[in-house]
Image 1 (cartoon, one colour):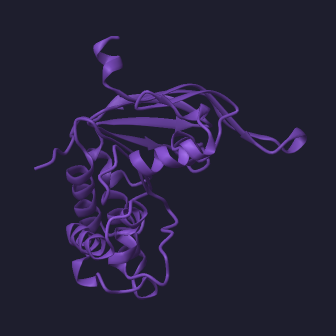
Image 2 (cartoon, rainbow, N blue to C red):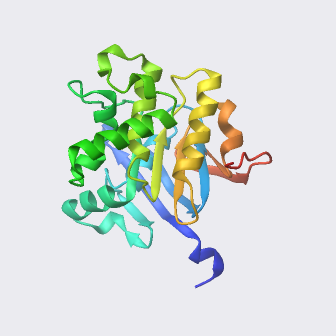
Length: 240
């Protein structure tokens, strides 16, 4: 095994995915080849409809590919059973989706703590840690608010806190700064880098927000279901 292979967190080879059948079938991904490394933020950028979110969903094992292979931390997630995928995600992956998927009857701190509830962390301790993570994303004062009393940007920060709270090895973010102003977006991205990135972790971010491109270590550009290029950034922001 080469040094590069040892540093691979994600390995995608020959990935194809389409939806529908016969005359209505739409091919979304066309033979995707992509690596993501330990200790990096990889950004996926490209026009709407080019397949970025579909690729993220496949890497997370939420969809099955039509063909090709997906290795996450050396495990072939595309060949796992549904139960094994669920366990793997719970133990290894944090998500920030465009739809925040907050539970309306829970407070912000409780929503942030949901991954800990699933892992049977005692409720009081879990909610305390949820409030602490909210503070890290600048939302500590809103810990007791329910989602309907939060703005879109505030809900997005709760979703980010929820994704980070269990310190996942892989953090997958779909437009994490879409609802945020520039200053808050910068703060959230710094939090994502500091809290979510380490030598044995990896972050993949889909974004249209060129204000945060400098937080990426590499940028993969997608067009029409294909990776057009992968390039290193020239002004990466490092964690303090």
